[in-house]
Amino acid sequence: MAKVLVLYYSSYGHVESMAEAVAQGAREGGAEVTIMRVPETAPAQVVAAAHFKVDQQAPVATVEDLPNYDAIILGAPTRYGRIPAQMAAFLDQTGPLWARGALNGKIGAAFTSTASQHGGQETTLFSIITNLLHLGLTIVGLPYGFQGQLRLDEITGGSPYGATTIAGGRGERPASANELDGARYQGKLVAELAAKVFG
Image 1 (cartoon, one colour):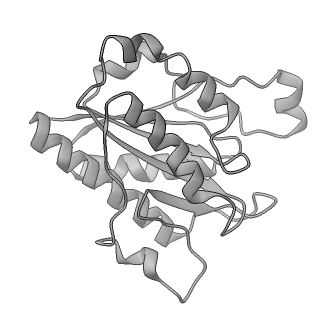
Image 2 (spheres, rainbow, N blue to C red):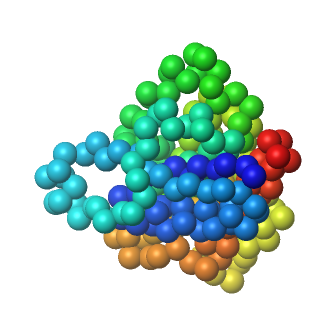
Image 3 (tube, rainbow, N blue to C red):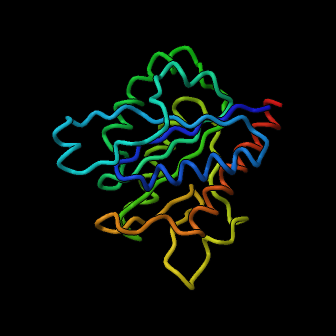
């Protein structure tokens, strides 16, 4: 059974809910799935003033957890079209893993959340994917086999580079059913590929 890590950062819970859907899909794909989050690096007073969601159930990961998995699916919200400092700080610690090739040949994928439809979804996905490629992972996107990303009857996230959600400028919009379906689809795809490679 392939082992899949869904690793995320979420300020307000949007990426957290996507992570849960990704994990559900990976379990449907036959994988053993662990959900973890990266450490919060913002000062406590900033977290409190900004009303970050602090009651997240996922345990905090360390960099040395990563080699224990066959596939790693990273999720983070956008910050000006790139990953937030919390995820960047975590990934910046992976140099020793890179140096020893600890993640070479593993499966990787990305998902994200933005405030608006054109708020940097694809550039944020690419900023995650770039890190995964440097670490030696093979990337799985969200192919057009998931037809939900082609919908025109509703506002929806989704990109061939990964599952996405649109949170709204004040974080008022939860992930839609279609966006969660996309996250599950991607998670299942990663699990099925990991089973073929590592099963």
